[in-house]
Image 1 (cartoon, rainbow, N blue to C red):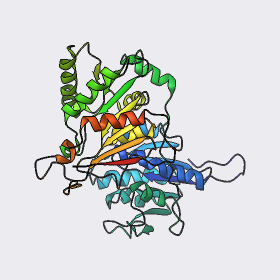
Image 2: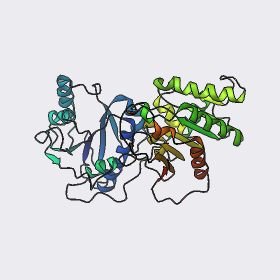
Image 3: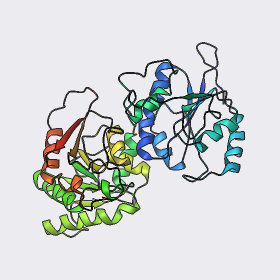
Length: 375
């Protein structure tokens, strides 16, 4: 495990990261990895995370190795954590940085005997982490800032500007995946739609709105293709969109210009295909963060949630949200049963955002724009 520097004859610092359990959070964690590489050149970074995250970690050059967390989300599994800790003890890490705030996420580092165990105070775990820090939420309003702050000492200022995630793709592999799904022949004019949201329906823009955007894009862009992405849970809503566009254009779902890939691709394949998108329209979801990390022009639609904590980290983003008084409520379903925070964002507003993104490159200052839709 421990390596020796070829240039200095010194042992490189070995750091273990206990990673988050959600796609978007894992994408944002890359900002921490970049800070570690910037401030501690030559450090070796391993990430302990759920197995599904490997396709993301494989595309982060800063990460040397991925270690699968052998527990389900929320599972305590003390015996499993003890065995994993004993295994990791032999890898001689100098420090572990724990990104989740739960008590149980700090147990494997404790069992591993890693000398320096860093994380934010939470769930009375101050005795488990010996570098346990108090979080000033007002000073660090963004999740990505809270991640990167753990990469420096408690007395060091958080890097400004915050590094932006950037997943790397292999162009040969992208071509193979595109060929597998018969996408490569469409001259690169691809509208990618991500209409699902693991969190709940209060984050999902209406399917007929997505269909209206898809139909307009196809009518106004030569050789265009619409590709829909998501998990198997999103298959039905994606198919509704395809069927509506196919019906409106007089084409069958099988021969039309819309391709429903929800549940058909692996996460790795979805990342590769999203890298080909001309523009992406997405709810607040993990795929939104992946599209941002690939620096694809992105329209991000916010319903019950807010961009104030976990915005897509790219300068090629337009975020749309309403200003109704009940938003953001952060509920999975609309408590008032009207979903106005979503229905009052119209297809025309999304199409206008797409048009703006397709103008010559906007100023690259690392900041996205947020458009509040008047109600």
